[in-house]
Image (cartoon, rainbow, N blue to C red; front, side):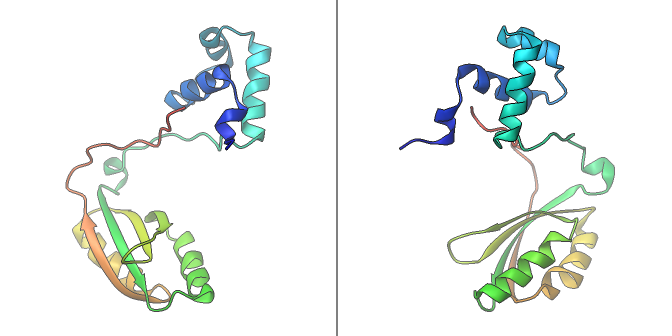
Length: 157
């Protein structure tokens, strides 16, 4: 079975790894690292972006310095798992900046949310005024992160 990783070569994978480690790496430095001309590397990066391997670039920020030092995972069980309830729930989650990630999961609950707020008082306010008022929410379970042991979005290429 062929996957998308089979459609790129070793140099493309090296470019992806380098950009993943430092998204601000200049095209010239990238070219030097993979031993190609800057023009060839620029074309490869454009192709990797066009083909969806590179989704974008962003800065990693310090949540504590920006008033979002408390990370909380929330399991959400909906009252009904029918399409209209799920669609409404998903749309409501999209507009909340405190909700960093929302995943539909298999198992004993329906969605797993990754949230960030300032502190426990802010979380109590958030769970009461936002999470419990989201459409279709029947039950939640909260898991407060005491220590981030590993935090990366890096994918092995």
